[in-house]
Length: 116
Image (cartoon, rainbow, N blue to C red; front, side):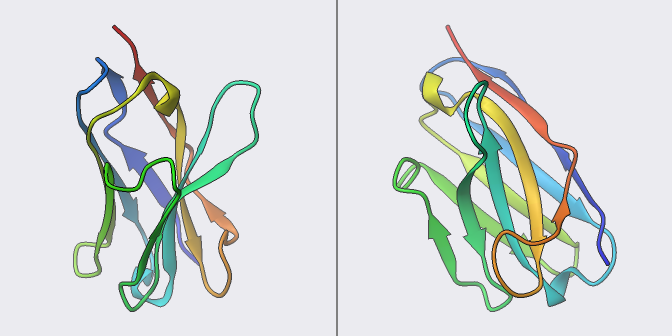
């Protein structure tokens, strides 16, 4: 089992950057990790995932702007977000998956707002 706590959200202007971090308890190295987001009135969607072996995937909407990384020793998974757009505004959730994404474990979410 794993517990997840996100941090790093906030308000940023368009074109700005934010770095989200997810701290995991338990054996994070056994899990694929992912970031998801949910905007008001929309369904939750995948942003980026990273497997236990380090293979990454990104939603088309964030390719080239966001980078997911993991540090198994620190038990953290980060999402570096650059060139932020207003449409990136959402609550961002960390997820841990034993087999298929999304897995059963979610953090509480952190708000990201992109506005001038």
